[in-house]
Structure formats: C-alpha cells, structure tokens
Image 1 (cartoon, rainbow, N blue to C red):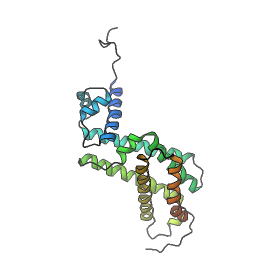
Image 2 (image 1 turned 90 degrees about the vertical axis):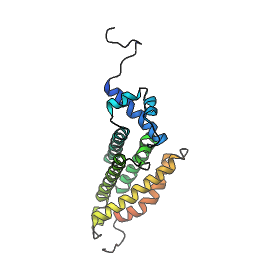
Image 3 (image 1 turned 135 degrees about the horizontal axis):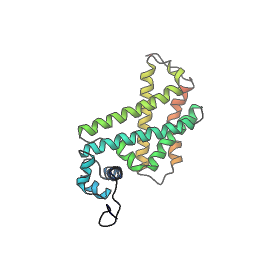
Image 4 (image 1 turned 180 degrees about the vertical axis):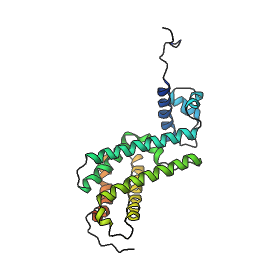
Length: 216
C-alpha cells in the first residue's frame, strides 16, 4: 500500500513518538537517576533512535522538566479527584487525600520516583523541582485551610501556620513513601494507617479547635 513503510510496520505519529519518549525517559530516569541516564538509554527504552528525541526535545533537561511538570499535574489532579468524592468530615477527607497519594505511588512508581528524588545539579531541572515542591505545598495548604479554617485564626499568622503544617505533612508523606518504595511487600492500607495515626493526631486536634495556641 502506498505510503506504508517497507517493513510493513505502521509509522508512528509524532504524538505517539513523543509519548514513547516520555514513557521511556521516565523509566530510565527513575531507575538510573537523571545525571547518569543517557539519551541513548532513553532511546532504547522508547524503541527509537537518539536523533528522534531531539525532534521533540532540545535537551535532556527539557525532557526531564516536561516529565516533572506533567506528572505533578497528574498527581495533584489524582488527589483532588479523591477529595471531591470524600465525605465532608475533615478526617475522612484527610484519609482520602493521603490514600490517593499512596495509590499514585503504588500505580505510578516511576513517576513518583522522578518527582521526589533529589534534584540534579542541572539548574533548569533543579528549578523545576522547586516549582513542583511549591505546588505540592500550596495544594496541601489549601486543604488545611478548608479543613481547619476557624481554628487557624487562633494563630497570629494563619497563612504561615497553614503553610508550615503543609510542609510537615508533605515531608511525612514523602518519607513514608520513600520507605515503602523499598518495602513493597507492605500493603498500601497499612502504610496509610501509619500516616493517619502519626499526622492526624496534630491536624485533627487543630481542626477540632481543641488546643490553645499562643499568639506569636
């Protein structure tokens, strides 16, 4: 048939090639690390030639930045969708959001690995890491403000208090997810329960307005 490749295989569209590159790069970056990974390894994982990568991405850094920003958007959407379906009770919403986070880790281990690994020395990629960390903090801060809006007013600076709580929750999730990445025999439900036990003691008390806080 006219226009078909000589070997009879269907020619991939530009979008399909781009998606292959992103999928292959995510696997290689997750397993090898950004600094060690080469464009040749990414090309082999994607089933293409290295030259094709440069038809879509100007550099390894540009490829990594697109992955970071795209997967961050997916994670935030993933958690937001779970929160929309959750009951109004603050603890139930907290549990639903954390469960969605760990489900994302479970279902997308390569994506999680590149999002939360140590940023490389490349300035563009390091800047992208900073941006996604700020996005994550902002999303968790919004959740805390909704769940504990009135009690937060007891603080001299409610916005700062919410952001500090968000940073602590974010790092607790990240630390436990990092441990779980190396202990995949542990069920997600058990991981979730340990996080809820640890974090909700403090957040739940604040949300319920059950602790007097000095105005500082």
